[in-house]
Amino acid sequence: MSAGAATEGAKKPFLTDIEEIRRRARQQMNQGAVTSGYRADRQAVINILNQALATEIVCTLRYKRHYFMAKGIHSQSVAAEFLEHANEEQSHADMIAARIVQLDGEPDFSPAGLLTRSHSEYVEGGSLTDMIREDLVAERIAIQSYAEIVRYLADNDPTSRRVMEEVLEKEEEHAEDMSTLLEQIEKEASERAR
Ligand SMILES: [Fe+2]
Ligand SMILES: [Fe+2]
Image (cartoon, rainbow, N blue to C red):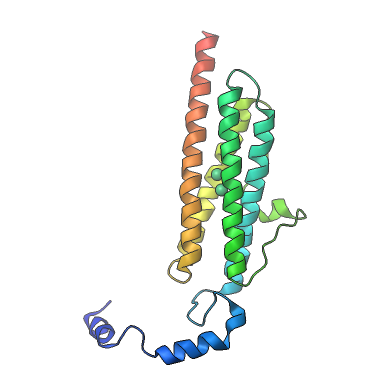
């Protein structure tokens, strides 16, 4: 910001015309949380959030499958981790769906085309190691695409950005969890092979 703009900003009261803001709020009541101050391309944001929603649903399903299929020496602790992640992905899906509704959009829960809308894949994985590896890949994909979404939303839709930042933070934890598990299991497997 230039010094000129700063002075100009300082001169202006924060709420220039409270009456006008009240009038507009009453006029467009059917638009819920979306006011004329909304700066993003609403439809574009809804579409992006629906892709994130599909990603979360696919991640929930994949972790659920892995939870029920986890077998072997580590099965109990790893299965517990899979279940915890499944539940967290489910809550991410809920947060994103709720935000879509706030934007006057419709959350897309349709199973048709779910994998096409999702950024990450649904891979069943044969062994426990395969499952963990696939989950790690999926988390890393989600981290990359959510970071891009956060940058896209920037200051144009700070509420959606905060939702996605919260989800992103969790996915980074998930990736860390999976990578730690993978290391442990691989280390123990190589010790047994000796
Ligand atoms: Fe998630
Ligand atoms: Fe995750």
